[in-house]
Length: 487
Image 1 (cartoon, one colour):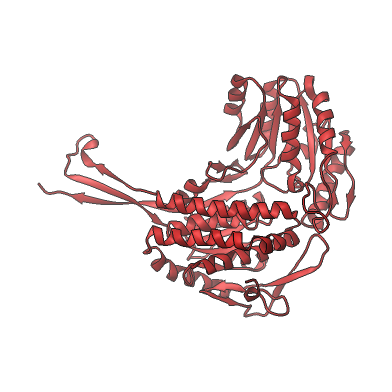
Image 2: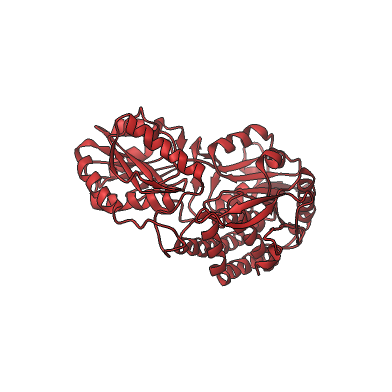
């Protein structure tokens, strides 16, 4: 199944109008494994002309795709979900090699994606319109009726990140397809092989020619061009705040749905169940080495319980499995995606030490593998209190009141999620109401799922709302037809 995507020299191809094509410029980008630096393959560095052809193809195909019944579109999504599970081992292995995620987590991502696609198909079949009588508004009679239905927007540009190259690509593709859009998938360069594999799954499931196409290439050459292309009707982007801001500035009159960075805080009150709290925080902070927008990235704890919490955190961090996924099936902390990423995490740790933070555990680095690290007595003068490491290092910030905790949490430029740990429901709701984030978790780590819940960021963490029904609505619009009765 995988062979059609590449030639004998490991040069991969892009999906264009149902065919797998190479690069007209014969330029490719090499993809190396973060686990052993082996060459996994090369993806085409597409030109602006190739982008034009891809967009024109998607625009033409969408006009026919939107005429399909929702049941026809849903059947294709059901088939794609089945195919994902049939090929779970091969795809999970590729993902492990490409982004360094352990095999157990990679398989879990694929199976979760299959569930996501099925639920999207079900939800798409339940999208309904409404009829509105004219006389429900003052001054009008009952001789007008507005019939409202949802229409697809057209061509959706889906830009996915490296850390969930299957799930976060499918979470854009499936809702777009079910409502009648065509899709151009631009996967992150590191993660593009997994993205191409996913596109092949959808192709085998029966997505018509040109309805799903892929684009790979250098951001410096086609990044701005593709996001400002005249044929793009909607952009769904997951990635860094820096790139999200750039897209937002460049685009004009094109709706955006973006999930960006985060600095998710876990606020721990005096009455929290510290054993449960420590377990949740460690799981939320260090899974996949913290390379997740929703990872717990700072702990804001009341001074009176800080010592005990730090002790419990240290114990649980010591139980984490650390290593190379090539050697172990299930791991918590793995090598970071690149040397650049590991260098940045090291900078934040060095800054914290220089400014007086206390290293509780970890701090060592071997290549791109950084031990799970906990700093105590971190202050707001340290970079680690504010910057997103995207790595396995977490600061403990001690506070004396709920108000101080809320203030520090809200001073962040980010606003994705926060957690509140307490046994007092009134405190939980009070703090949740004050926090400037898209989601507040009570007595649980910050996390994405379930996938049908609304998922959004405020401030520099994004714009728009994801979640299966919300994504479908974002990638469609109401269309009203008014019936005038002359009587």
